[in-house]
Image 1 (cartoon, rainbow, N blue to C red):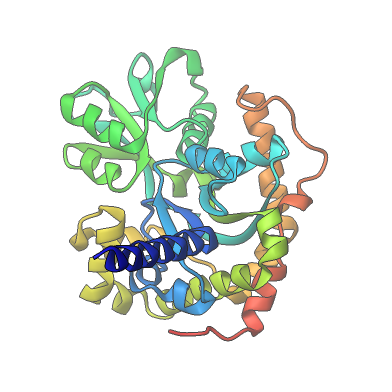
Image 2 (cartoon, rainbow, N blue to C red):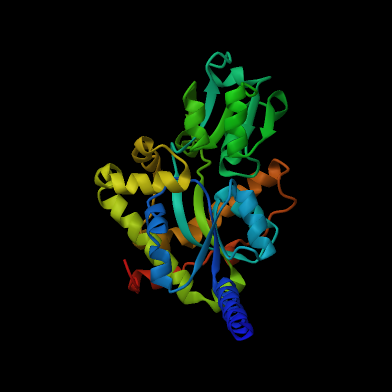
Length: 334
């Protein structure tokens, strides 16, 4: 009996050691509920097959939360919007933007509640508008108010995460919200879209989502970052080659809905709300265009008092080599 107990204890210890080693070897990736084509790859474990690594996927509600986790070292790769990215770079955090995830359009919008008395922009004055601070929607909201010549002091801007926005909306605590799905869908159920980020982009304030990586991790694991970019780019290419077919595939929409919390029947429309650059476009996008966009966003955030200073050069926070290598690399497994 004692011998069996010792054998069991040894086996348990070895198993524990194996699990600990596996956990230490795992890469932690922060994702958000944004609806995009590569969520299918995430659902199917394609990233793990392509990289040969165990991945711990952690869901976050906002880019600001992702930045905090990346800065602490708890997360190696994260999905963020251009506004939190600019704020992080302005704080000189050791990160690199290695992939443009989405050029944001109608997938983010300012919705006003039915019965709130808001029918035009000027009606927003004195109303409660909820938005996650330092997010792309926060940036778009501030840009829209500036475009409309509405003083931010004349509206009540509340800092709420998407799930908090959905709950506040259902309680009737807020008059408007600038957010993305699934909270956007909740608001649309008894509200109307006043403007979307596609409109704000036309006014000179475009926004985008991006994948960032800790620089120390990228330096030690360049193949992982390259394969991650490769998988993402391939799923974007699949979508862009035939958006209607991709969105009509129930397997695709069910997987995306499961990960994001969106309604399966709305996924196709939400996918169409953004544009997903292919790998061939990424190298160009990650050139001076992204650097200048981050700089311009940072300057706007400084003007709004959201960051303390603007850096003279944002090029160190944008790296195109991984997408260039991904264009020539082969995915380990599909």
